[in-house]
Image 1 (tube, rainbow, N blue to C red):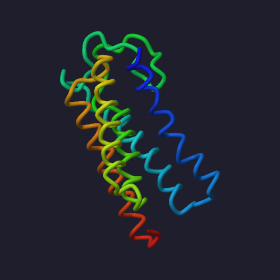
Image 2: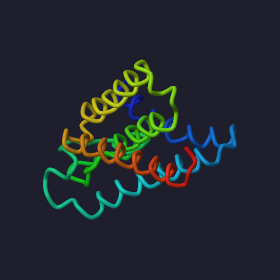
Image 3: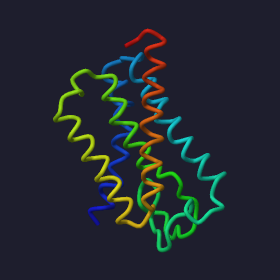
Amino acid sequence: MIWDYISISVVGLILYPLLMLIISRNYLTYVPFLLGIIITDLYTKIIKRNFNSHKILQRPDDAFNSDIFCRNGDQSGKPGMPSGHMAMTAFFFTFIYFINKNARHDLYIGFSISYILLMGAARYKKNCHNISQITIGAFIGMINAFLMYKLLLILGHH
């Protein structure tokens, strides 16, 4: 049950930049943040739809309730590479690390790594993904955060 709550918490990570955009009206930071989340989600969906022929790319046997709200039933053998939850979580914390100098504090880094590992554990314990799918999802999120941050630098906004 706790693993479901951890998995569902990704919704809050997705909503955060939208709420911050509305509250702060800092378009130069939060529009790229939102675009990065959308692009990260699209990457994972495209990969899942087009590269699922090998067993390692498919969800584990007994995968159940693997979607964002933990409610989509049996998912055994369906595309699972990469983990979208991990990609979103890694994107979120990595992007904040890049855009917020206060996030370079050891406490934030420790919390971020712990949260990313906790999400990975939740996805594994729920049997939604194998270790490879979780790891690749995290890397996709981190790489996308780095690329979005570099785009901000090129545009001269950070």
